[in-house]
Length: 439
Image (cartoon, rainbow, N blue to C red; front, side):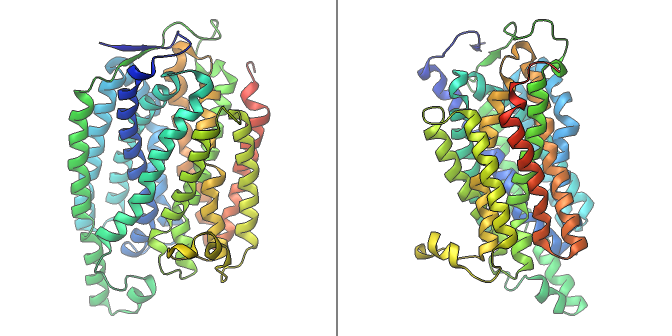
């Protein structure tokens, strides 16, 4: 079996091209499946008649799988190897996609949540295996650049997912707003909800077929294994908790994914609360801004800015955008009119525009944190990756905090106050946390 050695300072670009292509395909899958949730949340809110807090259990069920399954999956990877582990992760995702059929047929929210948990479990295996590949396949100084390229692919899928969801699921549905459905009589309302629910079946069958083909693609590809045995920075370390910069990095991932999911998955709810006509596709706006951020990362790191500087800039920009969310007009479309109104793309209220711009603000966090946190782990890289993946639980917990604040205050925009805690910690990690090598 071919392998990638991490003991050399650099690797041959030509030999690493195909592995990067394969990993790029997987990152596209991450993005497509993950950011489909942004459209699914307001959709299920209608089908299952949920409040904001209940609707955001979608993100909880999906992202909590990363916490529950991360370390078991790292042990599995030690036994199967990274390549076979990726194929297994895709197979688990096939099962999750197929579970949407009984979920749609029954309309039971718990079945939807179970399907999302299984999908998240499959993604946990893929994420635990693929992120170390991107970091270790070349020089660590340019790791953030490679992760930014993967992020471009990931977020491009995030742009497409809400659009395809709207086109395939909601096309021809007529008026599917909560207000319209609530105005129908009991029989008409039940029929409309059944129609919406059944519309999910064909797209998720298509997803299951595509994932099945990818299982064979990865299984029979020439994707090499990683060799991570003996280059640990601290030979006296007994486990991953001996590396403070990695543990603190996992906390940074917790807060980053929390605010990333809030920006991507609640923008639809916020737009729905403001009666924005195209609320089901608003996640695409956040994803476009994230794509712009990843372009900046791919072209500027490390040539013009360091990984640490990218992290600091992201934290500060995020706080400024949150101020915009809380203070900007919910009626004026001035900002979006200037930025893209001339293109014919639908404009949105200024406050919602600042939610979308959070995508640009924090786009560089993921590519900056991973190489900083995995630096010097050597044989503990798999454990470190699993710990970082556990940090993705922020996407499960922090949106619930958002939902609870929005539900209690009856003011959706106030939920974004959670973001100040997230960006505050990222600022700390960029300044101090990533440098710690002892407790």
